[in-house]
Length: 209
Image (tube, rainbow, N blue to C red; front, side, top):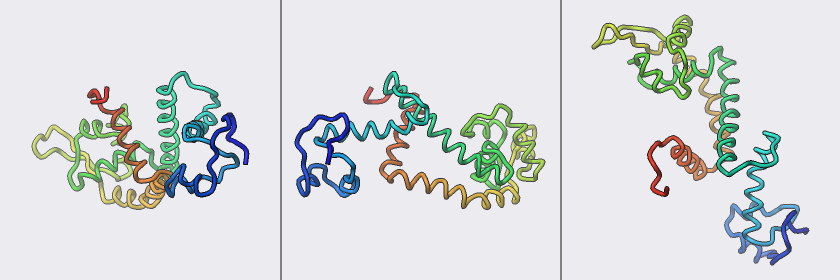
């Protein structure tokens, strides 16, 4: 078995020693490579290179100016990929992704509703015109407007039975998309991804900084 490309020759554990060298069922499951990784540092270097290859192929870019740039581009490209998949599901059901997001927000408080400002605050992607978004959903009978209980000047928007049925019809496809992500990441990796994303969203300085 040849050594890993670009790596110098070193100690080459094999058989039981090789398994002990890497350790764990997970690592044992990925040892069938067409080359031999000869040390732990080489192993991690190979894994880092493998993780960045997908991004390099996607952007047709051979190198990045810093790990921070690469991380940012990775987040943006991954988000675009997931959004494209969600766009496809929404298109099948005749709505847009922002409209789906709005319906999901209103389902969370059904049978009550939200005023326009609260809907805007909870949107994943800030829509420039929430009023027009609501107008289009109301025209299809998916939401309705009513006056607020405490402030008659404030319009409240709530989801209708038809809107709930639409979300229920979309649920299997949305769950399938979520499960496909779960199939690529372990539960621990999902939690770590959430933790790292939370750090990007948090405007407070990290204790580690």
